[in-house]
Length: 310
Image 1 (cartoon, rainbow, N blue to C red):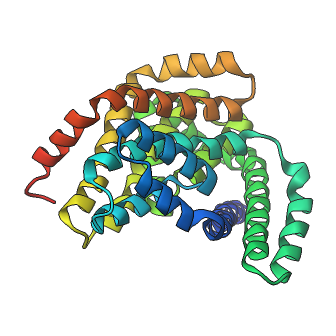
Image 2: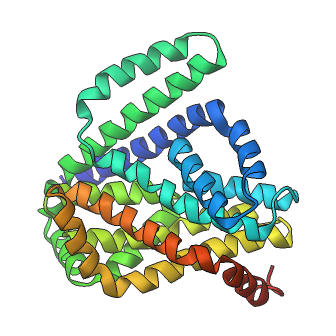
């Protein structure tokens, strides 16, 4: 029984990641080249970069993709390191649009999305292929979300897992650690947050534990950008370092405020999954707005601290 439950959990996580990859493939076909041009042209200031980063991430559904793209632009000299920081701030905001979407109950659209996706993939042309990938990927994500929510209670009924979840509910730092490690392994903060949402939807995890896992996921997602910067020039590595510092600073500031963030999210909606989505949005927006006027000083700190390492 336990083996079957964990096998199903692995299947649903894999299906979620597969859906994200397929959906992004479609979105990249529709907009990657144009976004690279927009990023290059409209990031001559931090606030413009933040707006572009948020919009690009919301549309491409991947903060990691935008930051990796930014690392590439900085590595080729098309974008300066200091202008890239605004994009990172915006990407952190834009990625919350995905969690807001996941929190909605859209299971009724699974079959139509699958049909549209399959039919579009059979049609010739790049645009039809892109639409097919987008539709089919979304359907896979919604199937995985339903599956994760269904598995939450059976998994939590296992004594050892139940004790583990109780520890996570009682110790917020454990939740932060779980979120960071899980995201570093599966390379998707959205997937980690989706797993937490599934367990919260079935009352297994508390909102505060879910927020702690979400905060940890923001740290774990930095691994992707760091890996992308390996072998790149000094400036490109600084982008990865800046991404790490921004997320670590934000999480350290908000760990003592998890209770307050939980109360705020609870006052906005009664849905546990939507509460976590709103908490993620509030966290990322506040961190980005606070850091925006300090971009110049932050860039100088990164350049000074990592001068010899980059």
